[in-house]
Length: 215
Image (cartoon, rainbow, N blue to C red; front, side):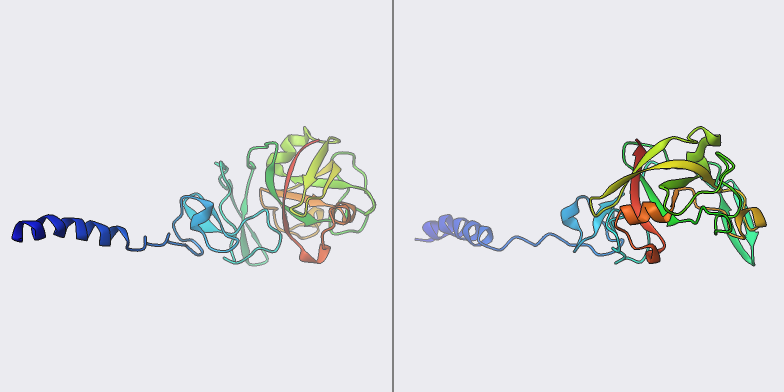
């Protein structure tokens, strides 16, 4: 009888252990560790091993901070003081791909607008009804993209093609030529009212994540 009990005891333990519920997958919140999208709670996505906001989702600011750009070795070239604040200067921008992540801002390219002087590509002003943009210094690439068309895509599924007419200067600023504005960030697509309207975006939002590519 004792031998039978010794034989059945391990079998009893195996059955009971196997019937225990498996531990639930750990779900991470902002900046928590992750390996896949399933490791993050809600609308957060896994970026470089941490859960963060999806930059392609307009208005998704759960973590209140933007995730670091991927594959971007562009470092500041210096700092510029403007009205008591320091702003990073950039001579480079993230690599251009078929879906380059950027921040869409709004600019008035007309005479007397917040864009300052005339557009550098054609030395002309442009009406707000024109689909035109300025690119950060690195993307502007010394004017090599002047007059070329780019395709801008919003997270709502809408897209628009716009002409590059100016540089969103990432090095200089805080002067009359730049309407007193500080240097641009290195990932800016500065679009006219027409660009925002065609994308179905609210200009009052100020800054919206988008992607762009050469048209």
